[in-house]
Length: 189
View 1 (cartoon, rainbow, N blue to C red):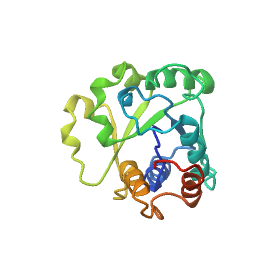
View 2: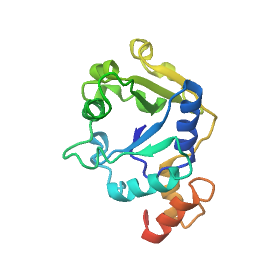
View 3: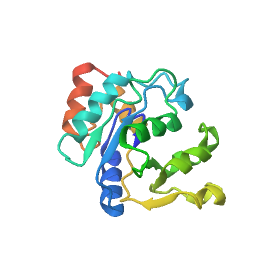
View 4: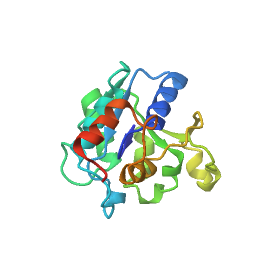
C-alpha cells in the first residue's frame, strides 16, 4: 500500500485490513512515498522520515502490517514502477504483488510512469471510497483493476492537517501514537 501518508489515518488502516482479510493476503506492506512526483508543488508534505515514523506507530499493533523504507532510501522521484521492480528483486519474481490505492487515485492513471507495466507487474486494487463513482475511470482501465469496496469511512489527510492548524481535535481520526507524534514534533502548524 503506497501513499504519501501525510499523515496516516484510520481510513488507511481500515482499507488495508479489509483488503488483507477480504482478498486473503498474508501481509500488507506500507510504503511511504518519499518524493511523490504528482505532488512536487505541494508544500504541505512533511519530511518523509516523519511520515515513516507515523506509519510505524499506526501499524504497531497489527502483526500483518509492515512498513518499508524502500522509497525513502531510493534517490529521485517515487515512481510505483521502480518500487515494484525493487520489490520483485527483494521478494523474488514469483511473488505475487498487489498495489492498493484509493479509487480516486485511479483517475490520475495518465500521470503514472509506465502505468501499463505497473498493471503487468502487480494486481492493482482500487478501494472504493464513499461517494466515489468508479465510472469516472475509463472502462479499459477498470477492466484491469480489482475494485474492492471498503467500509464507508470518510477521513482525509487534508482535513486532518487543517484541523491541526486550527487547533481542533484529531482524536479518532488517527491513532493515539500518531496524534502524540504530531503534537510532539509540532507538525502541520
